[in-house]
Length: 114
Image 1: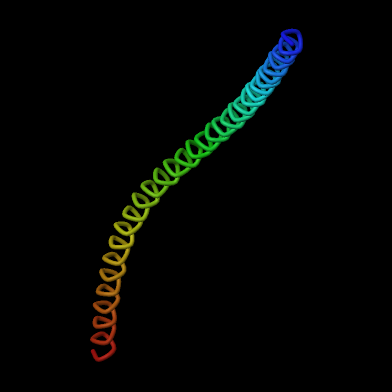
Image 2 (image 1 turned 180 degrees about the horizontal axis):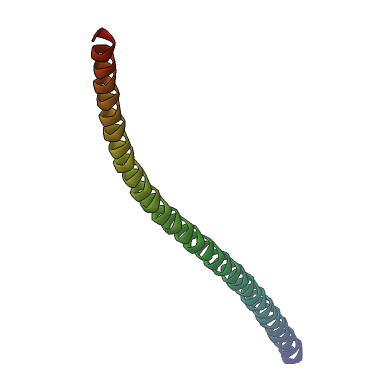
């Protein structure tokens, strides 16, 4: 009977060993799958980081364009102020000419009356 029990005990140990072996294989497979998943996640984060770097470059170019536009607006404001000054000067000259024309018309009218 001891052999039967020994055989049974041996069989029980084999089954336990087989289950432990299967558990180890399952754990190793799970570990490998987890590593692969983390590698995929790392790749995705690397692509996201790359995309953010591209977006940052685009924003830098946009900021540069806005800076150039602001410079141009400052130049345009300067030119408009200059033109406004010139228009004021021209208006004063035209008013002076109108005054002289009015004066000449007055003289011509007096000459015609004389």
